[in-house]
Image (tube, rainbow, N blue to C red):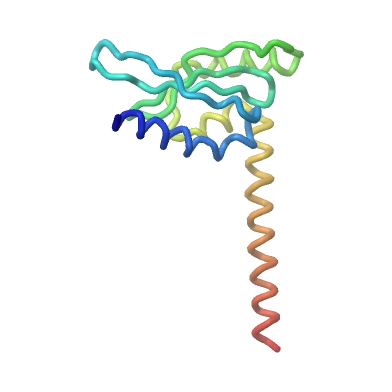
Length: 134
């Protein structure tokens, strides 16, 4: 039961990426690890370029263990798949690092999200300072 709760918490945490990958594509896959007799979580998602990734989660971080094209592959998807496969089995400290490395569209949305947050903070700060002057 505890493991199920951990998996659900992990899935909830990963939902923050839902708007930066193909919406609704994130799911957890259970994999039995014979070496430790434990279930190791794997994550499946489709990046915006149309490439499905299977990502292993461990104490060392995130690793792409496999990738394939979505049903309607175009040239962008094929080019992206080639880049993704260059990073197969490479470790990444965070999901952001992994996705930023293999998905230019993710990277663009991530940067836009940061810009939007900074703009909102700047606007709030300007309004706060304006209110203090009156």
